[in-house]
Amino acid sequence: MTAATVPGQPGPAGPVRPEPAEPPSGELAELCRQAGRLLTETAGPVRRIHLRSGETVLEIEWHGTSGSTEPGGPAGHTPADLATAAPADAADRGNRRVEGDGAGRRTVVAPMVGTYYQAAEPGAAPFVEVGDKVEPGQVVCIVEAMKLMNEVVADQAGRVAELLVRDGEPVEFGQPLIALLPA
Image 1 (cartoon, helix red, strand yellow):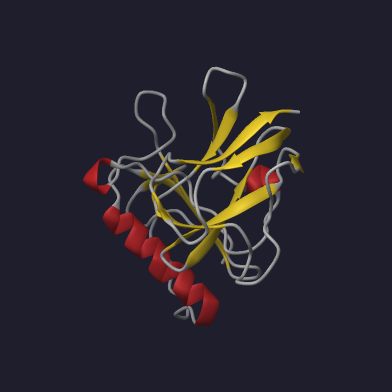
Image 2 (cartoon, rainbow, N blue to C red; image 1 turned 90 degrees about the horizontal axis):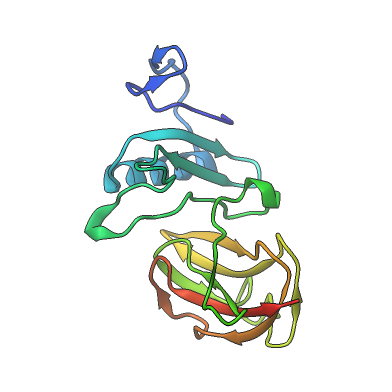
């Protein structure tokens, strides 16, 4: 399965009816469970769901309101598009966001609620350290949410000025994670 439209929700030609198929198993079954959980925990109509079993990718895109592309969610937070437990190309990632603080310094912020990690696994080298140069699309950290590792990427070049969160700390949607200075 590579793409799906939500059953019962309008698609390009009206409501989509589920096709009979074998029940998913393994990695794909876990992706389906995660997608189902996300759909029940968030408000707003879903525009698109993309599941991929090889290299494990899960993306959910909501219809925005007032020009926004982010959904309304529980407890007042709005999760961003969800992407990946494995590599996907930078253009596919909907989880990058950079904000400025008015002094030329920019921050990479958490795309969702989860746990912040500086490295791909315990004991591995961190994705970035203070003083490192980063390029657009470069992975700078991971936010784990519901057992999925979501890569967070920089969307512009810069130099890491400060790591604002300690490894393993919980983070909130929109919380600044890494401060960047212009390259």
